[in-house]
Image (tube, rainbow, N blue to C red; front, side, top):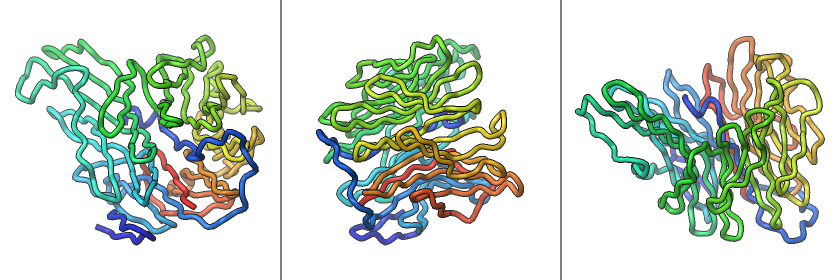
Length: 379
């Protein structure tokens, strides 16, 4: 295991994943009266992601650019989110495993590089053990996001239940879930993308049917009504009591990037290309959103994007690569974005961090990456 030196610790360090990637929320604390952001200062930068190593997806963390591998006994492991508090580094994701010769997903949670025991959640039914050939109930669980609030650890995850009897599927349902200190709560049917806690209130974003929504303490707040097209709320932050959500909605085959502020919609997309808002951060009254724009129909080429109070900036030009920006964090006047870029010629894949629009690369290139990256910046 690779050992990574921290200032105060050692880091010992596709079913839903292909369609929904949760993006890291802003970690800004609530500000009753937002002030201009402070000047730029030094910070520790944590990024998590997964890359192909010899044909196996390996979960990793980069601390100020130095790579560390997260332990896994699985053939394939993916990370989805990272948060840091009181010198503890939490990463969540999932791994693949076999049940009755079927590939399923199981939640993962690492603290300071050590894998935690995450029990299979059977809240929606009794697990039918292997050996019963007439009935099967399979559970698929993917941890999507993590948020640290004092001593409390919140995670959200999507779980799928597939129940077959005598080879016939009698149940195939997806449920939105979250956990506080490993105590699980069901939100009903749906898929989750992000979690945020403010003043003791728990906010979870996602999709239910074709509608984008967030749950506040388990109560649904719909952002779209499904009349235009399928929509997904991807990322959430709450600052000064104002709820900011980033996501996208399909309009006649074209996804439009959107922000909802206390439920009021702002469309970020200005052209005719598909655009998606995937992450949001708010600091000093400035709303920062990251995402992507398809520069070629079908998405074979795309540009990673940053919107600042609605003004768009391309982080890549989209002419020779397929790029997307998944996660965003703000420290003073510095804006950090992380994402991936696949070079079309050569098919190399790179994990990028853009600081104030300037790119740095964390990996040496790979023929495959794990679907998303997430970032946390600690002053």
